[in-house]
Length: 192
Image (cartoon, rainbow, N blue to C red; front, side, top):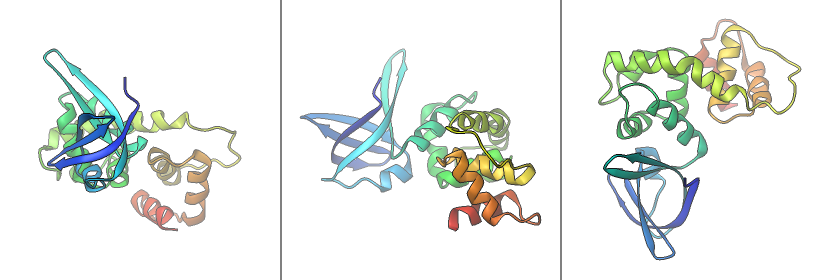
């Protein structure tokens, strides 16, 4: 219903930001990383998701579209509601979270408060391929270079983080070495 809300931050508390838009205060639940980017008195744009339940409507906000997209994906996993999805988003950096999901690292996910081993495994099983498929359609022009194996997996992680597919392929191609893990390829590509 609301793609984003832009307003003045009037209140910041644990996992909640209030944005004043024309005299109306919107209470928006946010992840810890988004919360850290909000300062009282500054104008802020949050990409939003309206969660409607039988007895309640809640607004969730995100610093960028990639975080919102990952939130919606996490919420689609059985047993994960919107507040737990926010906790997961706040449990590690967005790029590390996407990397751990795509590379199947459920043990890293189970290190997040409130996420047990079974939930972490369910997230990996349900989202590993979905994340790749969700972001695969962002290609705007035909690709001249195709990657395989670990290089392709690293490129998919970069695309999940908001890179255009061509830019992800270029970044991975510039740093790729057969002896590197997917995690190392992604980190090196991000740091170049």
